[in-house]
Length: 421
Image (tube, rainbow, N blue to C red):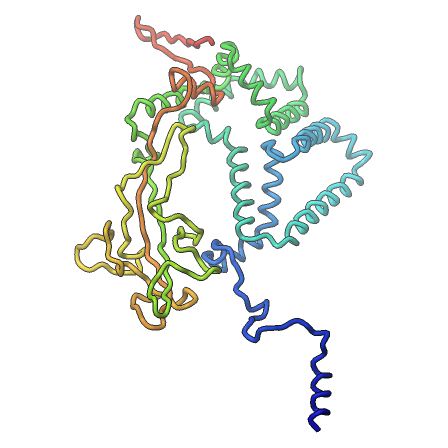
């Protein structure tokens, strides 16, 4: 009986199975998964909206990369200019002979764009990738609109431009009737807009603007000062200020409060320590749960090449006793503290960093508190040749400043004087 039982048991456990499994090993799908800190800190509604808008963000990013000549292949922008000029100049012939094909070409272009977007979506972009694409699209849109935004025109400037344009109406009408057709004018205008941000156009403008005749002609045609005198005035005023002279638009210094979160976990028999589980947040994180260094090792961004640098306003890091408004400070006590006790300012959570509470109960195994320190943007001077304002103007490809002086005799006559290179 026993021999038969042993033989049956040997059949149930074949010798070919040499792998030994531990009974306490969890399944692969039960292991903790790493998630993006940005995803965990973003509301689901915002994440869903960004995911649905991703095709449009991707399309806008691609279009403005062509308009600003910042795509990987500049030939695409060049082909766009050629296509624009061809369509405007030969519109009637194209419609007459190839009108039906143009409709198919438009549909094919839409299908190609749609397929490109779908292929990007099949990769299941992360929230970080969507934010990165949105940031690129925003930067390119701002770059495309920078010529208009940099003018900073007021109502008086627009009125002056309007009256100057009205006075030039006879000249424009003569040109449109006898010299250049309206179609060519539209084509040239579109080419200027499409090539404005190309390297060749930027170099051409910089070379032409060095001519006093070009600057004088521009002033009389528009009545506006495009010479960058406002820019140079702002630069000179900034450079003439003290070291901490960098200010925002409202005249106040540019300041930024850096935030670090200290995270701890309670271990049975040991207590609260900075030793966290391998798959959860780091002992020190920023507001978005990204890993950061300890306050003693934290360094400010280095922007020396831009002529400015960040400097600490606070002498040391301070503990936020309110923990970003979660705790209430009684009386008139300060909301920050430079030398707190080990048990101040904590918010307690359960084992999975949920169910926040101000009480240190037995069911709370994690906690965190908030440290803050303010920095200020300081002006350290630009690293250029002698005359910082002049070197800045040249490096930014800003033309020379023009001066409109009123003569001393009578104060009625005006003279327009430009500085030569």
